[in-house]
Image (cartoon, rainbow, N blue to C red):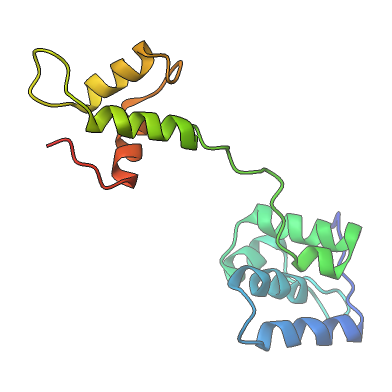
Length: 151
């Protein structure tokens, strides 16, 4: 059967992988990637196919493919390292806007209402141009973060 990426581990690499797996401080994802490489090694005999490795290691077929590809193209260290390519989203509410929302919630309620509601706060924040667009959930989370209750 044609294999796009063939893993051939040297004795030293095999020893390093087994050391990593047996270490108690190694995280689960690194252990799974190391196990994938051991199971796909052509030098150790007949390797498993990707579908069998998926089942054996409890990962998706994409994880197996990516691990094998990373090993063949970039080496052992890169294949076992954690890679996050996408940065986390920046916060919608910054410190200044958060302070203004909290001050508004702690202030006097609007005329005709006994207290602030999340809907009223959302409308007022947009009306006062504190934020151009904001959801009720964002306002609720901001108040919750400061342990503020509108009741």
